[in-house]
Length: 92
Image (cartoon, rainbow, N blue to C red; front, side, top):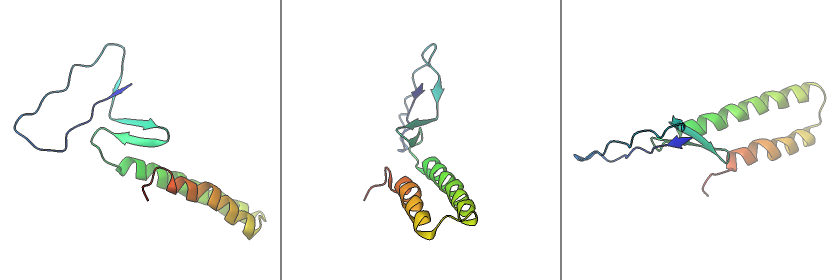
């Protein structure tokens, strides 16, 4: 796969992208090491993916709670899954 990054600057001299290479798909989003990289240099898609994954995990934790998992075990799973997912690739 190939991704071409668009320039954020508005200038008079816009260089058109090179023609696509044969047998290589050109994409606008690429997931690299768990981080969604966008061709327009926006973090919106990555943030949306992280929020979606965390929401699914919270739903699973609610189900585990209704089936009798203790509060301390829930907190441990929350820290191990949700907090680490939120902190991964976040600048501090």
